[in-house]
Length: 355
Figure (cartoon, rainbow, N blue to C red):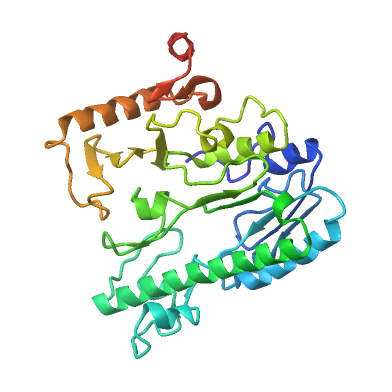
């Protein structure tokens, strides 16, 4: 309310920052909302939105087409250091069943309404809202989940195509690859489908894979990180200074083992009236009523059991950590202050200063 869908000019964006660091940024995306006029294209030499070319916002645009278009442009620019922003939308609605995976994940004899896919309209999603009004029978729900899984496997195959192409070009080991997503999808775990309706793990916990042997140590980092950390990581890999307005931290030190053992939080919000913070296996959610819910997302992955009463110490840890962050978030600066579970030296004094 009262906001704008355009990125304000005073905020530095990806294309501008990497261009200043010596890369030529180009983009090919299928996300109808990631647009040049929205400010995402600032600094890019080329910025192509293939979904907008179709004249729609949410439509069917196979990732292979987006990847092929992006790789064709990368070949043109391969003589100079280049950043390629590549955005696919196959796991977004409409959900399309992808072979051969759908027949592995679902009964090939299925004859319900979702044989080839599913749409938001068929599930009663109202334009401008992000939830279903129609809950299908269990067999159809399982089919929709299998369709979603088949789209993820389709994405995996396209990532393999990308790696193979970079290897054929002889630049794979010199290329930083970051794979992530903007959100997940609910598929009736709580009587809803779509996204934007809750802060469940199926929505807010997304993949983050980084390949860059020169600067990022291989292995699994089982710590809480956030998407605000992605851009500082890119700039760190380029040897460029991140501007003060960027809130995140480079993930290179964490990947190398720095600060391991301190459980780092990850935070997400929903339209500023609901908030969640996860620390290790524990997660706190606070909605409009202000009553916290304590969840063990490892032992209870469906997030059904509120353990606030049975785990009072965990609840206190989570409420203290989330409360400190929410009370100071307009002044919090992660790169200089650290995180709420591991404050940097001097962070407390900075937070106590009068705004």
